Amino acid sequence: MLPLAPAIDPVLDPLVIRATHALKRLVAGPPFRIEHARQRERALADVLSRREAEIVALGPAVRRRDREAIARFDAAIAAALDDLRGDAEARAAATGAERLAHAVDRLVHANTHEWLDDPGFDERLRVRTLERLDRMNEALGSYDAFFAAIEPVIARARAAGVARPTIVDLASGHAMFAVAMALRFGAREGLVRVVATDLAPEYLGIGRARARELAIPEHALSFVPHDALDLRDLPAKVGSPIDVVTCTQTLHHFPPGMVARLFAEASSAARHGAVLVDGERNPFTLVTVAALSAALGRGSLPFLHDAFVSIRRMFTEQELALVGQLAPRADGEPPRPIERGWLEPGHVFVRSFTGTA
Image 1 (tube, rainbow, N blue to C red):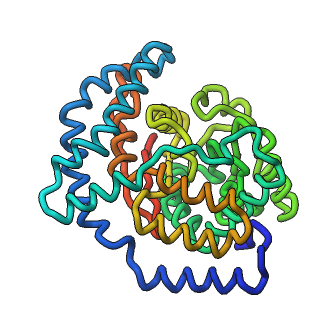
Image 2 (tube, one colour):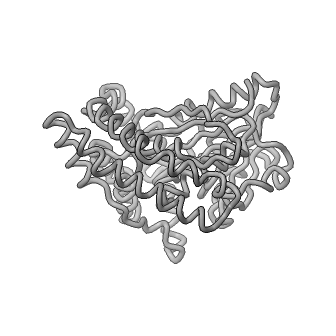
């Protein structure tokens, strides 16, 4: 696949990327992740047993977009997630190592705003910071991991007879992952159609310019300003049914209740399935990303700051599973079949399947 951003240093960048790929082959995930996951699974079951019924009962009113219900739902999801991260996980700790892991995670987690979230952030620095993010994703092989999570849903659409699935990417930001999907899944060859959406047209403009440079036509990859929390009119706006919905590396920017509502909206809008991906919060990833950010982001304080802050805001697999499982459902809507898991080098996903294969 073509590089999605220019090299900062044409000599050093390839060396950093090769070294990172070599390290990935040697290290099969963060140390002690499996052990800590067992503790978190017990905590997840505990929180669901105590809170699921109350939150699910709010679902129909939330799906009707009742403002009071949405406020109550968002507060309940936030409380459930705080419970999972705090008391429930502490109670689930059965060994000294698990208690230590929980204590370290409490130190790592923080909800500090990223500089890129500031609308007044300098535009030139914004573009430079995003280019460094693209280079880091290339170094880590992040997009390849995302593709692996999305491919089963595309396959489901093809099995249902859809010759050219329409993939909608929500909250795309500067839309470089949408550009990557168009290249990977054959949008230029007519195998898929990709639609990048975001509330900020100026962000989408960055992706549109890169798509032109790569000779990806507008009918293969389009850019549509749209709210990720209300997809009711999106099929009409893009001119076709939506087969697959994706949202990657954005979830930690949103309150957890909003993530749950986004997952419900995406699952309802997609004829075949939705995939949400975010980075996983853990100390090993924090150290690795900090080191890689220093190597690839030379001289870019905003990139170093936001890379560090992002990891501290992200989800664990069990936290994202909680949010996905408690996503609101309409009256009479059955529970969604949901899959979730970990993606190398350090991401987590939740995936729903809709329709019939």
